[in-house]
Image (cartoon, rainbow, N blue to C red; front, side, top):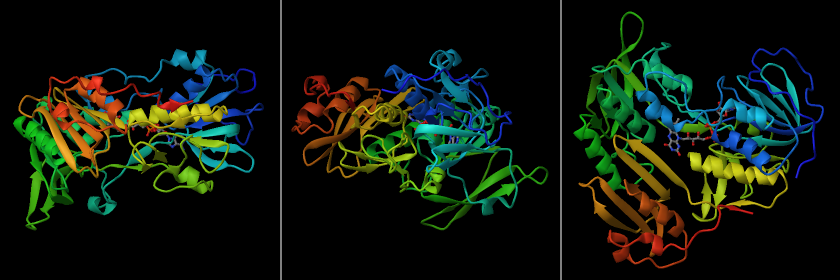
Length: 448
Ligand SMILES: Cc1cc2nc3c(=O)[nH]c(=O)nc-3n(C[C@H](O)[C@H](O)[C@H](O)COP(=O)(O)OP(=O)(O)OC[C@H]3O[C@@H](n4cnc5c(N)ncnc54)[C@H](O)[C@@H]3O)c2cc1C
């Protein structure tokens, strides 16, 4: 439990502040860098655990923290309005969370326990949390010939989604580069809005990084039935630009097997080729980094006063049995709760089954566990019905499920995965068997 501290002032935005090199926080408390799913959850959890000291939550984004998943789904289909806030502004005020918006933290001085912001402000901390997330991976600049096309989009932030949304006009031709979740969700949103969509994927199947071949072929068929053209095993080689403003007029790709080069004419392009964790602050401060800020099961970094949570971390997962870096809201939120406990000296450890969801058309895909390394799959239901589940087993143990419109099976398997019990494959395949009966309730993922 933290000490009692005087109330800090709530600041809706810090981007205009001019106080340079001023140690504003005489009574240094907990500072959190990054205010998205992980950062906000750390702040709120600290208060829920009755921490009374100052909390400063720093974001380089200008708006109130918002839900990121809708950006490729409902938000793209909407015609106006704000994003869905993670918490209303009043929550931060009531919880005395000092929200500092629109300014990046640029340096951590671990020796003096201080943070430097881009506007020169210095903030002292007693404990620090890093929730810096991830940023989009970009195509090589060499493909653009120093041009900055207005019709080429990436999608990570609300600003990105807003710019893209304005160009999603029925009848336009969209090329999506990358058939991961974000690419396919954008393709689905655009096809529903009446655009003509072509998806280019470097791998031999869609969603190759995250699911098995059965689910990949299902999603390929679903998209194709909605008129989406999918080109697999192809590499983007370059772009053709309009003569006037330098917008992209066509995407040039090469088929990897045949070597054939093709130009796809287009009105706009969305690139979804993955993300890179934001680790530079941590690395420059001398923290251990390895494709993510390295933390232990308590979310502690290599500094006893600094925790990290969310997309930016590489952490041990005791259920999967190895180090992971995950990109999911569930991981961000649940790891954040452990990080908050650790900051307060409460014994907690993170041991959650990873899970994820994706909404495309009228299909909800829910995935739990990690299927890589499986040696057996079992199917329940049929692809044709649009409601089915694929179970992945390894040496007789259930390690993952991908469920399409099958929430009950998904929920049951979240509890079954990682349990040291033999699973009857006939029961898995039989839609009449209630899997919840096989699943003993799992204890809290925050093991306190
Ligand atoms: C379009 C889209 C759709 C998605 N759909 C799903 C989905 O359906 N299901 C799902 O589980 N996940 C989904 N995700 C992934 C999910 O949004 C992320 O896993 C989640 O946002 C991770 O939260 P985070 O807080 O760890 O990091 P982030 O959300 O990346 O937030 C990190 C924040 O820190 C800020 N920041 C970074 N460095 C600094 C600095 N130095 N100073 C100040 N601020 C800084 C960043 O600008 C950002 O605001 C989706 C992501 C996108 C982009």
